[in-house]
Structure formats: C-alpha cells, structure tokens
Length: 205
Length: 322
Image (cartoon, rainbow over all chains, first blue to last red; front, side, top):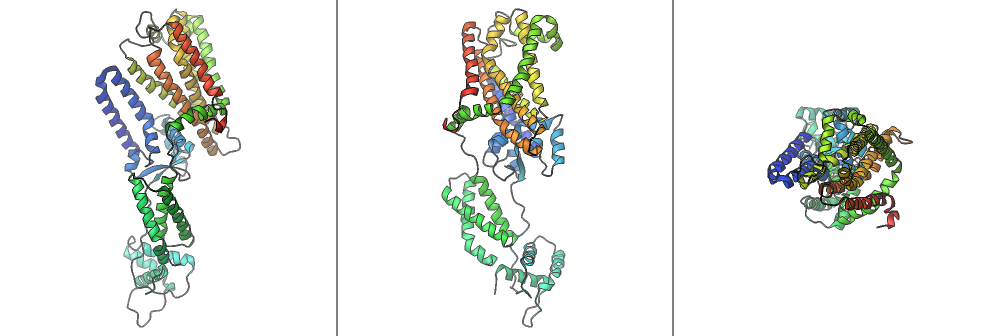
C-alpha cells in the first residue's frame, strides 16, 4: 500500500518534470532524465534519512524504517535496502521479495535482510488507559506482583472490553476481594475490583 | 512506591520531556544537554516501571517517549561537505583496498572477456556478428563516422546536456542494478560485468578493424578511466554481497549477508561517484570533435593515472589522514 502510494507520487513527480522541463529542448530533457534517475534511485534514500525515517507513502500509513536495534536508519543501510530492491524485483513483480517476506518471521524483503533494517509502525498500539475512578478498597490479602499486574491491566482495559467480558474477568479475581463490610455501599464485583485496582495504584481514601 | 506517587514525583519531568520532543518534531531547536538529561531520567524511570510491573498505560507512555527520543538523539546529522571530503579522500579508497580480492575478481571478470572479444573482433568480421547483429554494428559505425560535430552520438542534434542526463540515468542505473543483482549469489553482478566486458570489447575491436579507430579511441579514452573503474567497482560490490553469504565462514548466513552488505556499500559509493564523473566527461568532453586527439590522449593518460592513484594510495594514513 505504502509502495503503491510512493509509486504514484514518483510517477507524479516524473510526469511533472517531463511536462515542466521537456519544453526546454536538450537541457530540459537532460534534466528530466537526471530527475527520473533521482526519483527512481535516490527518492527513498533521501526520505528515509530525514527525520521521519519514511518515504511519504510510508509516512501516510504510519510506517517508518529503523535498524534492527531500533536506531534510526544509517546511510549505508538505506542505500543497501533500496538498491537491493533490484534483486527483490526479480524475476518479475517482486517475486523474490515476496518469497523472502513469507519465509522470515519479521516479514523482511531481501534488502531489509541484508541491510539489517525493519519497517515498523511508528505509533505504539494503545490498549490500556489509566484505571477508571472508583472508591479504593484494600484487597483481602497481600497480592503478589503478578496478581497486582493482572488486576491493574484488567482495570486499564475497562473502556475497551465489553461490559460482560469485563465482569466475567472480574469474577476470576473474586478471591482477592475482601468480604463485604456493613458500612460499605453496595457495588458489584467488577466495581469492587476496580476499587482494589485504585488501592494498588496508591489511592487510599 | 505506589504508581500514583511515582507518577506524581516524576510526571513533571515527563511532561517537560514530551513538550521538548514535540518541539523537536516541529523542527524547532531544542536544548540538547537538557534533552539528554531528561532522556536518561526517562529511561531510568522506564526501567523501574517495568521491573516493578507498574500499570501498562504508564509503561507504554514512557516507552513511547524513550523510543521517540532515541530516534531523535541517535540520528546521523553529519552530512556536510567536510564529511563528504573525508569519505572521498580516506574512507572510499580504504574500503576499496580492504575489498581488494573482490575488486580483483571483478576486474578479471571484466577485463578478460573484454580483451578476448576485442582481439577476436579485431581479427575478423565473424566474431562481432556472433554477439551483435548487423544493424547494431552499423549503428555503432555511424556513431563514430568521420566528419561529425559530436562523436559517439546517434544524431548530432542531441545536445550535451541531454546526453549528460542520459548517461546518468542509464549508466549509474546499470551500476546500481549490477550491485543489487549481486545478492543472487553474485551471479547477477558477474553477468553484468562479463556482458559489458564482451560488448565493449566487440565494439572497440570492430570499429578499429573497419578503420574508425581514430574517432573511437579519442572519444572513449578519457571517460573510460572513470566508467570502466565504476563498472568494476559496482561488480565487486555485488560479488562481495553474493559471495559473502554463499561462503559465510564462521558466521550465520544472515549475519554474513549483513556484514557483506555493510562492507560493499562504500564500493557502491565509489562507483556512483566515478560514474557521475564519467557521465560529465562523456557528455561534455569526449564528443567534442574540435579538441585534437593528442590533447584528449594526454588528458586521458592523466585520468588513467589519477583514478588508480586515488584508489590505491590515498588515505593510507588511516584515521590521521584527514
């Protein structure tokens, strides 16, 4: 998809160059050829080495190129991955590239394998929010670190899980809830567990 | 420490850091030292938050900030002229010498077919017709015919600038493809190098045989110093990558491929540079019919001395030679 977008942009630039400069005779058509050369070979390299680390097409889809280590892509790596596109294209229509992508876990084409680069989604996936507010409730016993983490991440998904699933999960943790006190307002298990989550967050009153 | 106290204590630093990152994203100048201090603090907090199993939204927030700052701080920025000069004077010749075996291999793959096909085509008319058909040969003959304004062209009308663009588009494209195809066990590069050697040999031999050598040789003498070296270097780069993973030594094949690609890239830079210079000479200097052949041969000899000197001698002082 990003590739198609970039292809369109590149064709657009090529066409613009041809229309804009083609009228200037020898000098113009020479510049057009240089322009086409630059767009064909240097366009991805230049854009990947800039701050965004992505061609316009990739950026539009929230992708970027990084080294395997998570560092920004280096000039040598960018040259490698973009010049090896030639090999990915062979024997036709990116066949080698597609086969290479199917054969490794990180879905890299040959150029990425050789350059040690990775195409990643730039924005992190957010599945968890802060636990929703609730009156704090001390758990029945001291909870282990894993139990605490489980309750907190359950609470963090309050907005994203269906209420039925949310309650169902809450019942699994019922053992952590203290017995209902006489002076305590009436709430269901999920609300009480959210109280425990708030207590774990550090809220006391 | 509870997550809430943790956030209350360090939250202001995170907010300030996020604001600084936001400014940097918009391209404004930010205080690097302050950014670095805050970056360290955020990484520290991230490690603590992870080891204490703090809520995921907190860890994710720190992770996202640390990742973005990482990209910002470790970005390469030294793209100045000084860097380019050092690359040309020290690093490229050094890299070419370091890959000397592959360069030699590519040179043999290029020069032997070239010499053989030159001699065969010079000797008699049959051999040239095995490789090219008669119409192609006639086209080459017309390009170097007598009494033309500009040598080596299909028509006199194509201006120098047009040819400059064409040589860049075509020749450097071939150089890049020659490297890229090398990953297929070096076969692609070897093919390009051998094929070009054969073709150039045949054309040179044929034109010399039919008596157009006095037009052909002054035309090619100068830019060939850069162009042929560029072709050999891009072939060597491709061979380095292809043979690198084919015979990985003590590394895994993937590691070997990565190492080989890293080692080969300077050769591609050098080839790119040489082909660029070659295109300029080929477009503006070589076709000029008004320059006497003796002058062209003189300049050509100088270029043929300069290029090997560059690759073999420059930057030998290592890190000090800058």
